[in-house]
Image 1 (cartoon, rainbow, N blue to C red):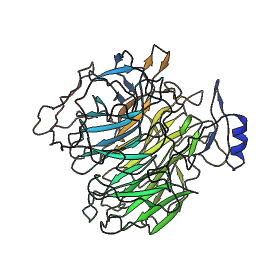
Image 2 (cartoon, one colour):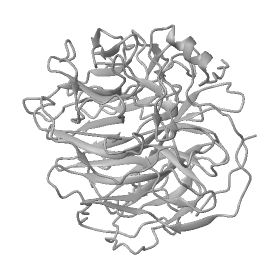
Image 3 (tube, rainbow, N blue to C red):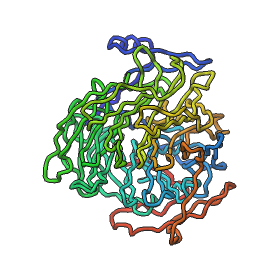
Image 4 (cartoon, helix red, strand yellow):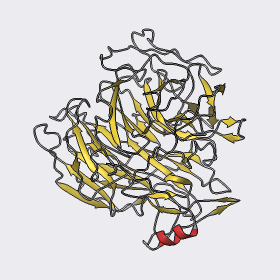
Length: 544
């Protein structure tokens, strides 16, 4: 089913039109930077559209990779070439991180890769690390010349990585996903489902059942309604590790722009925004012989709505993240929801949080996580969080509280050790950056950032504009990794691996930063289609 593109206008006529549906629009002037209006996140349209063909081939120039120090926090650039250098003139954003639970040295980050900022044609990029995030290798993209977006990654309990990727074409004739797996720490990927074979659609999210119940290993995804089947906000299940996906099922109340998770009893919970925010449960999705049904639908007040525009003119100002405590302690199976929302009467955002202690039947009143005084000129955007195995909550977001112009942003961090009842004083963990520079012919820096926690801290993937491009006089959008921690020792510290073996693929070129020796034990790779040997920089070609 063909999806029609929807053009966003920032003219007065558009402002008047949107105001008639009761949502405040505001243009904020910040020392010469006039922001686009903020409006409620759109529905019934694809946020990812094929607008440009691939940019023509060009001479690739490089500069030293960025290592950005801010206090005790160090951000390491992930989208670097095979020699560990920054690629001048490209862009990368919308990053999803996964960590090997059996070896925290091994991580992968997936992102939207733009080979040249003159075109917003994007592909499925990724990088991997074997030394706890100090150095990264970017082997290339999943498929050269294939339009891809909305990258999502997850890991299973064995350390296998999975990459769910949206695909479309120049005619926008489909919005379908396919699933890829890596058994060697993200060094290479094998397509599990054929192209478009995972169903799904735009702004999809993925989770994996890691419990010991009947649904162990099942994979679940939900989308925003612009999807492969052509109808409704839908849920899909795979019972064979992502090779095949069962027929989509419409989710009650149509919650979009959210995530999903599984509790220790195997119940699946989907969070997202409909007429309000919702938490929707399926208790039988874990039964492979049954068609999943949804037996609990709970509205959740987060003190506002998801926004679009403003500080991220062509994109969301945040998504809804749902995560479940599986610590086995007194907070086990608590359900948490967090999002950057636009409160009533505002055009800027706060990071808001709510929790359920009764299996999603009821939720607490919304609670503000950012601890600065309410200021209608300040943004707290791209809020995301995760739950550590010991039950600690880690939240990060972009924040403009320290900016005189109200738009320069820093990554901020807070944590909670009492199930979100109280949150630690907020901490800035990155240098300020200008979010309006480095656009790859579209006015946004993606739609989300992500974090994965362990018992001592959190591993964060985010986009920022620290590198300067002398060719166009602007900073560039790049992907960064930073380790955050409530104990004040955030820098990556690789743990030893008992029996290190040489890597079978390209390893990072040493930089001026001391790099611990990587240790990789590749697992056998299945025989279906594989990614070619990593190259320093693939040249895009237009898809036939």
